[in-house]
Image (cartoon, rainbow over all chains, first blue to last red; front, side, top):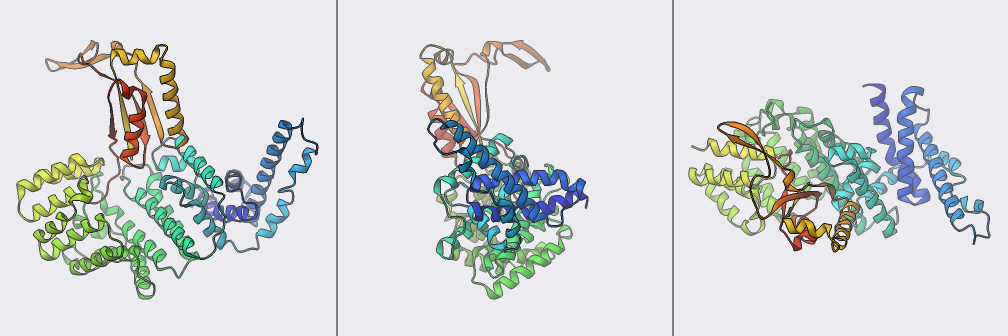
Length: 418
Length: 120
């Protein structure tokens, strides 16, 4: 690993700790976030040349603290100029906050940062924010990514992403949220939102096509890194462990999920020799541990299903009865139409395509417009030997999808039906 | 999901925007642009010049030939677009419905094709 890459990793790990400590001390999330970004940029420029300081966290806290003081000072000066005609007190009196920041910064270095990082995550995934804003803010404030990096990962202009971030910060400021949440129901719910945001980040990276820039698939690595960090903070939470397992077991298939020409390879046709054995081993160990000791949750069940697939050496050796049983559990604890769709595929593998089609028929209202429903119906019709209907359904699904690789895949499936 | 909002014109509708009453219409345009910029939904957008400036490339005897003027004499022609990213298709349709040209000419909201794809 190059010096630059080592410095970057170090900075990305330190970013949430420094920001969390600063916000805990001073409030004003948005001002602190700007100050930390500036400190990270300064460090990225200086450290590779001058060497990493002995106490990098204290260095960042000091520099960010100074930026914060500067920002306040110039704000105060501006305000003082604006109302100088009325102001009886000297402008200096308004500079008070942050005057002793550097001393505090040194002191902060000895305090635990775990709660700060978690508070920061809960803060960025504030329920008042839209999902895109939660994602953008989490990647910037907790992940330490630049706005330009996040914009390129989500294929939008930098100005659009910058706007989403500043809007999110303004929204949080308007709600006047307390930074650290005490234990209780709200905290538990907020934690579920954090996990969902991390899941969305992972998915955005995982579905990126292989021909795309590295920045996009890096989102999977970032999601895994952050989920690992959350697991370090909450080692007893089974859903955190389940989500990490789900990510690893899914990511393990990445190299096999696309062919050399970028086309999608379905699970049943993937070269399982190209699956990442190390990620599978870690994912299976995690989910086994979670299932043995924690209350059951939807991420754990999804990870368990992924583990059953991962443990089959050949597609034909897949333990479909076990997968059907797991989907039944998932339908019970977290029912949603996409779960039913996948359940129908598994049922078809155990009880035949007609049984799967019967389950699909219960979905027409909920997913009537979805290309996925039509694609699954096409597949089951093909298994049932109804070639004409299968071909029509594949073509219908191909027209409905808004994904280019999926469209190519479905057109290809339609052409193969004889 | 990203959507393109396709804005259609006819000869009169474009003039409406440039006439005296046009200032109020342009103010509405600016207000919507400000709203979707502030919300982080706006990705881009452009207006096209008058269709009389068009060159059309068309196959003639197996060879692409360039001619002056638009493809066909139509009541409406493509006049410009907005590119937005919205959480729901309903939200994208809502932006289009409020675009002031909707009072004179139709608009279309079409999802973009994504380069991403899931295993099926």
